[in-house]
Length: 398
Image (cartoon, rainbow, N blue to C red; front, side, top):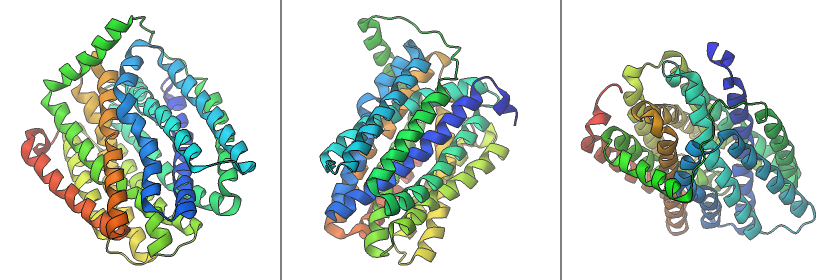
C-alpha cells in the first residue's frame, strides 16, 4: 500500500498497533482483577473512569502543546513513562504489595499518555498521509486500532488467567520498551514553536473560540460526546456480564470482549478500501446508530453464542464512527488549528467517565444487563436529537 511507503507513516502506524494491543490487554486484565477482588461493577467502572478522566482534564492542553512543542519528544516522554509505570506495577504485583488504589493511580497516569497518543500521533498520521489520502490513512489506523481491540482482550484474558496481574505487567514492561524503541525511529518534520505561558493560554482560548463558530465541527463533536457517554462505557460491563451472567472463565471473557474489535477491524478495512469524501458523514452517523442498537440487543443475550455475534455487529458500527471521527475533524478544521481541535476532540472523548459512572451506578442498582439496556436506549434518543438539530449530520459528505 502506498501509504506505508510514506516517510514516517509506517513507524506511526506500527507504534499505534503495538500500543493499542497492550492497552486493551491491560484494560481487560484490570477489569477482571477489580471484579475478582471486589465483585462490584461500580469498582470496575471506577477503574475505567480513572483511565479516561485525563482526556477531559488534559486533552485540550495536550492539543495546544502538540501545536507548540516537538511532537516527537512529547510522545517519547509519554512512552518512557509507560515503561516506568509498568515495571513498577510488575514489581508490586510480584511481591504481593499491589493494592487497588495503586492500580487506580497507575491507570490514571497511563490515561494521560493515551490522551497524548490520541491527540498527537493521529494528527501526525493525517498530516503524513496528506489531504487526498487522509480518509484512507485514518481508516487504516482505525482498522489497526480495532484489531488491537480484538487481540488485546484475547491475550489479556488468557495472560490474566494463567499468569495473573504479575504476568500482565511483566508483558507490559517488555511491550512498552519495544514501543519506545520503535517510535524513537520516527523523525518529525514539524519544528517546535517556542512560546510563553500567556501565548499558550491564548492558544487554548483560541481553539474554543474557533470551534464555537464552526457548526460542522460542533456537530461532529456532539456525536463523539453521545457515543462516549452512552455507548463506549458499556464495554466496562462486558467483563462483569461475562463473569456474573454468562459465567465465563477469564479466557472466554476475553473472547467475548474481542467481538467488538473483530467487527470493528473488518468494518474499518472495508472503509479504508471503499470510503470516499461523499460518504464520510453518512458512515459516521450510521455507524454510531448501529453501535447503539447492537448494544441494546446485547443486553437481551443470555449465552456466549448469541452475545458474540451481536457485539461483532456493534463493532462494524464502531468502525464507521471511529474512522470518520478524526477524518471529519481534520477535514473541517483549518490546518493551523488541527492539533488544538484534535485536543478538543480528546476532551469530548474524555466525557466517557460520566457514562462510566452512570453505567456503574445503574449496574449496582439494576444489575449489569439492565444497566446496558437503559444506557443504550438513552443513547439512541440522544443520537436522534443530534441528527435533528445539526443539518451537517443529515447530508452525505464533507
